[in-house]
Image (cartoon, rainbow, N blue to C red):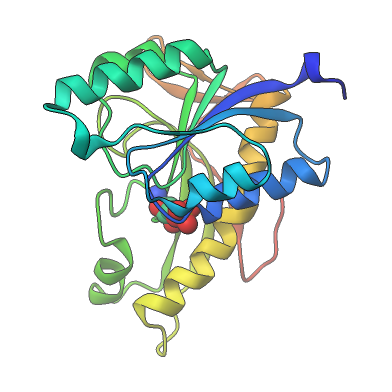
Amino acid sequence: MNNAAKLRIAVLISGSGTNLQAILDAIDSGELPVEIAAVISDKPAAYGLERARSVGVKAIAIDFAAHTSRADYNAALDAALAEIDPQLIVLAGYMRILPDPTVNHYLGRMINIHPSLLPAYPGLNTYARALQAGERHHGTTVHFVIPELDAGPAILQYRVSIDATDTEDTLCEKTQRGEYIIYPQVIRWFAEGRVAMENHPDCRTIMDGQPISQPIVIDADENTHP
Ligand code: GRF
Protein backbone atom coordinates (compact mmCIF):
# COMPACT_ATOMS: atom_id res chain seq x y z
CA MET A 1 0.00 0.00 0.00
CA ASN A 2 1.47 3.41 -0.87
CA ASN A 3 1.75 6.33 1.51
CA ALA A 4 -1.12 8.26 -0.03
CA ALA A 5 -3.55 5.52 1.02
CA LYS A 6 -2.37 5.39 4.60
CA LEU A 7 -4.49 6.70 7.44
CA ARG A 8 -2.75 9.47 9.39
CA ILE A 9 -3.02 8.90 13.10
CA ALA A 10 -1.81 10.70 16.23
CA VAL A 11 -1.12 8.61 19.33
CA LEU A 12 -1.48 10.23 22.75
CA ILE A 13 0.40 8.66 25.65
CA SER A 14 1.50 9.40 29.20
CA GLY A 15 3.73 6.48 30.04
CA SER A 16 5.51 3.36 28.97
CA GLY A 17 3.79 3.03 25.61
CA THR A 18 3.56 -0.73 25.28
CA ASN A 19 0.34 -0.30 23.30
CA LEU A 20 2.12 2.22 21.09
CA GLN A 21 4.82 -0.42 20.60
CA ALA A 22 2.22 -2.97 19.51
CA ILE A 23 0.93 -0.44 16.95
CA LEU A 24 4.47 0.32 15.74
CA ASP A 25 5.16 -3.41 15.42
CA ALA A 26 1.96 -3.98 13.45
CA ILE A 27 2.90 -1.14 11.08
CA ASP A 28 6.42 -2.51 10.76
CA SER A 29 5.16 -5.95 9.84
CA GLY A 30 2.96 -4.48 7.11
CA GLU A 31 -0.28 -5.49 8.83
CA LEU A 32 -1.46 -1.97 9.57
CA PRO A 33 -1.93 0.55 6.74
CA VAL A 34 -1.42 3.67 8.85
CA GLU A 35 1.15 6.38 9.31
CA ILE A 36 1.80 7.73 12.78
CA ALA A 37 2.02 11.48 12.15
CA ALA A 38 3.08 12.10 15.75
CA VAL A 39 3.15 10.68 19.23
CA ILE A 40 2.23 13.25 21.87
CA SER A 41 2.80 12.98 25.60
CA ASP A 42 1.83 15.24 28.48
CA LYS A 43 4.94 13.95 30.26
CA PRO A 44 8.34 14.62 28.65
CA ALA A 45 9.84 11.58 30.42
CA ALA A 46 7.28 9.10 29.05
CA TYR A 47 9.19 6.16 27.64
CA GLY A 48 6.74 5.93 24.75
CA LEU A 49 8.30 9.10 23.29
CA GLU A 50 11.60 7.25 23.15
CA ARG A 51 9.93 4.31 21.39
CA ALA A 52 8.63 6.74 18.74
CA ARG A 53 11.95 8.56 18.27
CA SER A 54 13.87 5.31 17.94
CA VAL A 55 11.93 4.45 14.79
CA GLY A 56 11.90 7.97 13.37
CA VAL A 57 8.34 8.86 14.39
CA LYS A 58 7.79 12.47 15.44
CA ALA A 59 7.62 12.67 19.25
CA ILE A 60 6.09 15.75 20.87
CA ALA A 61 6.17 16.50 24.58
CA ILE A 62 3.61 19.00 25.79
CA ASP A 63 4.59 19.17 29.42
CA PHE A 64 1.44 19.56 31.52
CA ALA A 65 3.50 20.63 34.53
CA ALA A 66 5.13 23.46 32.56
CA HIS A 67 1.82 25.12 31.75
CA THR A 68 0.34 27.76 33.98
CA SER A 69 -3.20 26.41 33.79
CA ARG A 70 -5.20 23.48 32.49
CA ALA A 71 -6.68 25.81 29.84
CA ASP A 72 -3.19 26.73 28.71
CA TYR A 73 -2.18 23.11 28.38
CA ASN A 74 -5.39 22.25 26.52
CA ALA A 75 -4.81 25.10 24.09
CA ALA A 76 -1.29 23.85 23.39
CA LEU A 77 -2.58 20.32 22.81
CA ASP A 78 -5.36 21.57 20.52
CA ALA A 79 -2.83 23.57 18.51
CA ALA A 80 -0.52 20.57 18.15
CA LEU A 81 -3.39 18.36 17.03
CA ALA A 82 -4.62 20.97 14.55
CA GLU A 83 -1.15 21.15 13.05
CA ILE A 84 -0.92 17.36 12.72
CA ASP A 85 -4.48 17.14 11.38
CA PRO A 86 -4.89 13.43 12.16
CA GLN A 87 -7.67 11.32 10.65
CA LEU A 88 -7.76 9.30 13.86
CA ILE A 89 -6.57 10.04 17.40
CA VAL A 90 -5.52 6.98 19.37
CA LEU A 91 -5.42 7.36 23.15
CA ALA A 92 -2.94 4.78 24.40
CA GLY A 93 -2.46 5.20 28.12
CA TYR A 94 -3.06 8.96 27.97
CA MET A 95 -3.87 9.78 31.58
CA ARG A 96 -5.63 13.14 31.21
CA ILE A 97 -9.27 13.85 30.62
CA LEU A 98 -9.66 15.77 27.38
CA PRO A 99 -11.98 18.80 27.48
CA ASP A 100 -15.40 18.42 25.86
CA PRO A 101 -14.71 20.80 22.94
CA THR A 102 -11.66 18.76 21.94
CA VAL A 103 -13.57 15.49 22.22
CA ASN A 104 -16.48 16.91 20.26
CA HIS A 105 -14.18 18.26 17.56
CA TYR A 106 -12.79 14.77 16.93
CA LEU A 107 -16.02 12.87 17.65
CA GLY A 108 -15.99 9.59 15.76
CA ARG A 109 -12.29 10.05 15.07
CA MET A 110 -10.92 9.33 18.54
CA ILE A 111 -10.58 5.92 20.22
CA ASN A 112 -9.35 4.77 23.61
CA ILE A 113 -8.36 1.51 25.22
CA HIS A 114 -9.61 0.95 28.76
CA PRO A 115 -8.59 -2.00 30.93
CA SER A 116 -12.00 -3.39 31.81
CA LEU A 117 -15.00 -4.97 30.15
CA LEU A 118 -16.88 -1.69 29.83
CA PRO A 119 -19.43 -0.63 30.98
CA ALA A 120 -18.02 -2.41 34.06
CA TYR A 121 -15.28 -0.58 35.92
CA PRO A 122 -14.83 2.79 34.26
CA GLY A 123 -12.13 4.92 35.88
CA LEU A 124 -8.92 3.88 37.62
CA ASN A 125 -7.57 0.78 39.41
CA THR A 126 -9.69 -1.62 37.43
CA TYR A 127 -7.60 -4.73 38.19
CA ALA A 128 -7.71 -4.20 41.95
CA ARG A 129 -11.42 -3.45 41.86
CA ALA A 130 -12.26 -6.53 39.78
CA LEU A 131 -10.21 -8.80 42.07
CA GLN A 132 -11.71 -7.21 45.15
CA ALA A 133 -15.23 -7.80 43.82
CA GLY A 134 -14.50 -11.48 43.19
CA GLU A 135 -15.15 -11.22 39.45
CA ARG A 136 -14.64 -14.36 37.37
CA HIS A 137 -13.72 -12.38 34.27
CA HIS A 138 -11.98 -9.17 33.37
CA GLY A 139 -10.58 -7.71 30.17
CA THR A 140 -10.07 -4.64 28.07
CA THR A 141 -12.18 -2.55 25.69
CA VAL A 142 -11.48 -0.39 22.67
CA HIS A 143 -14.18 2.27 22.35
CA PHE A 144 -14.94 5.56 20.65
CA VAL A 145 -14.39 8.57 22.90
CA ILE A 146 -17.30 10.80 23.87
CA PRO A 147 -17.30 13.56 26.50
CA GLU A 148 -18.51 11.18 29.23
CA LEU A 149 -15.53 9.27 30.64
CA ASP A 150 -15.08 5.66 29.46
CA ALA A 151 -18.68 5.67 28.20
CA GLY A 152 -18.32 5.87 24.41
CA PRO A 153 -19.61 3.13 22.11
CA ALA A 154 -17.52 -0.01 22.50
CA ILE A 155 -15.99 -1.71 19.47
CA LEU A 156 -13.91 -4.69 20.52
CA GLN A 157 -13.17 -6.40 23.83
CA TYR A 158 -10.66 -8.99 24.95
CA ARG A 159 -11.92 -11.12 27.81
CA VAL A 160 -9.78 -13.11 30.25
CA SER A 161 -10.78 -15.37 33.12
CA ILE A 162 -9.67 -14.55 36.64
CA ASP A 163 -8.06 -17.49 38.44
CA ALA A 164 -7.83 -17.93 42.21
CA THR A 165 -4.09 -17.29 42.02
CA ASP A 166 -4.35 -14.05 40.06
CA THR A 167 -2.85 -10.87 41.47
CA GLU A 168 -3.10 -7.35 40.07
CA ASP A 169 0.17 -7.98 38.24
CA THR A 170 -0.82 -11.27 36.61
CA LEU A 171 -4.25 -9.95 35.69
CA CYS A 172 -2.69 -6.85 34.18
CA GLU A 173 -0.18 -8.94 32.27
CA LYS A 174 -2.73 -11.24 30.67
CA THR A 175 -5.14 -8.41 29.94
CA GLN A 176 -2.45 -6.30 28.28
CA ARG A 177 -1.48 -9.26 26.11
CA GLY A 178 -4.97 -8.87 24.66
CA GLU A 179 -4.60 -5.10 24.28
CA TYR A 180 -1.71 -5.66 21.89
CA ILE A 181 -4.06 -7.73 19.72
CA ILE A 182 -7.25 -5.67 19.82
CA TYR A 183 -5.87 -2.13 19.50
CA PRO A 184 -4.04 -2.68 16.20
CA GLN A 185 -7.08 -4.68 15.03
CA VAL A 186 -9.52 -1.80 15.61
CA ILE A 187 -7.16 0.73 14.02
CA ARG A 188 -6.97 -1.55 10.98
CA TRP A 189 -10.78 -1.75 10.81
CA PHE A 190 -10.96 2.05 11.01
CA ALA A 191 -8.34 2.43 8.28
CA GLU A 192 -10.27 0.02 6.09
CA GLY A 193 -13.51 1.90 6.69
CA ARG A 194 -15.07 -1.12 8.39
CA VAL A 195 -15.79 0.57 11.71
CA ALA A 196 -17.22 4.01 12.37
CA MET A 197 -19.26 5.87 14.95
CA GLU A 198 -22.74 7.16 14.25
CA ASN A 199 -23.79 10.21 16.20
CA HIS A 200 -27.53 10.55 15.58
CA PRO A 201 -29.83 9.90 17.28
CA ASP A 202 -27.35 8.25 19.70
CA CYS A 203 -23.68 7.50 19.56
CA ARG A 204 -23.25 3.92 18.43
CA THR A 205 -20.70 1.76 16.71
CA ILE A 206 -21.27 0.83 13.09
CA MET A 207 -19.45 -2.32 12.02
CA ASP A 208 -19.47 -3.30 8.36
CA GLY A 209 -22.41 -0.95 7.80
CA GLN A 210 -24.54 -2.33 10.65
CA PRO A 211 -25.03 -0.85 14.13
CA ILE A 212 -23.83 -3.14 16.91
CA SER A 213 -25.35 -2.91 20.37
CA GLN A 214 -22.62 -5.02 21.98
CA PRO A 215 -18.91 -4.98 21.29
CA ILE A 216 -17.29 -7.85 19.44
CA VAL A 217 -15.55 -10.07 22.00
CA ILE A 218 -12.37 -12.09 21.73
CA ASP A 219 -12.25 -14.61 24.56
CA ALA A 220 -8.70 -15.49 25.60
CA ASP A 221 -9.81 -18.97 26.71
CA GLU A 222 -11.71 -19.80 23.55
CA ASN A 223 -9.12 -18.31 21.26
CA THR A 224 -11.90 -16.78 19.17
CA HIS A 225 -10.96 -14.22 16.58
CA PRO A 226 -13.23 -11.84 14.71
C1 GRF B 1 -3.06 0.28 29.08
O1 GRF B 1 -3.11 -0.91 29.80
C2 GRF B 1 -4.45 0.82 28.81
O2 GRF B 1 -5.46 -0.09 29.06
C3 GRF B 1 -4.60 1.96 29.77
O3 GRF B 1 -3.32 2.43 30.03
C4 GRF B 1 -2.37 1.40 29.83
C5 GRF B 1 -1.26 1.99 29.05
O4 GRF B 1 -0.14 1.17 28.98
N1 GRF B 1 -5.49 2.94 29.20
P1 GRF B 1 1.00 1.46 27.95
O5 GRF B 1 1.52 2.88 28.19
O6 GRF B 1 0.47 1.28 26.57
O7 GRF B 1 2.09 0.46 28.28
